[in-house]
Image (cartoon, rainbow, N blue to C red; front, top):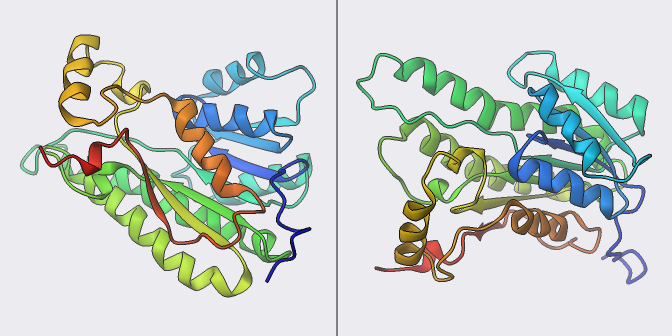
Length: 258
């Protein structure tokens, strides 16, 4: 059992990789972890979105940008190598990158949407964790947080590729929590509900308000920063006995029965 001295609530000098850091929850997480003293490797396919991070953190912050396509076979090795060169061995992974394509089973583009959705939402998470495994296990205190969705706890049509991928993230999290637990690595999952991100930007504000009033206990959409703070809680050294948890950050969406 870790001593009280080891149960630190500080991530100063911890090295974190955050995918999907060019926008939304990934961006908010990268900024928050930097503000808490971590050295952050921010990953996204959107180079411009990554560059905007520099405007959100103080000059000279320990922030390194990696523009990468997570579906590329060499992406995990490239990201880990960049982390090692910039800051050293990796302590924290936040898999926040994700895509969503509303598509019906009989649509012409269903197969392509299925493959790409799983490549980004599931495969990339597993491959990055594998590439960092030696780092995460070296001190017995590695932290992994995978972002799923409340879609990983239920289903909405026409979202089969997205919904199935998020159920897969939940399963991946639970399985790796059991597999990696003996080495001290914790693996947890956050299922955000309605959050104001790029994925929801096209929904009109009045429609968001109606949905939130009807479906959430808090009667509003959440903000990316609210998800980021839950992620921070899970990556703290002190969060040493929480693993395999599937946590909702959804304003009470998942508890409503009507």
